[in-house]
Length: 118
Image 1 (cartoon, rainbow, N blue to C red):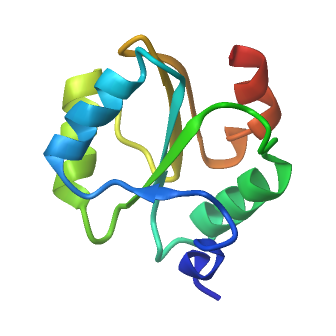
Image 2: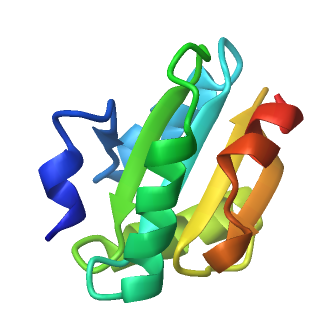
Image 3: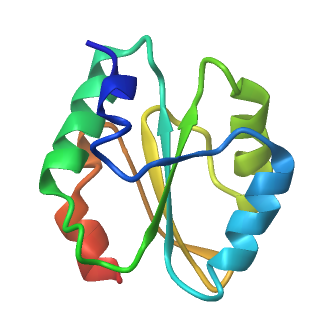
């Protein structure tokens, strides 16, 4: 089952353009932003995404963005360059005030740790 099937049940906003990336960075000055970089061809990425969605506390005031790495690989490279992070997949970044304050990948992705970082 594709993770896109959960899109309506989980409040993801698709990240698909560099302009959107700029807007997300600006938004992070108003509220925390999560970027979840997901490979739709990777079972580890699917497991990490599913676990994140199950564990996430929807009462938190955080904007949730996802990036389909297969469809938007160049944008993933741009995220790595602009935010000065090494590309990994899957990967979650937490931005606040224009800065990455939490980063995790693969099985290290934890909704609880992100909540603690807020």
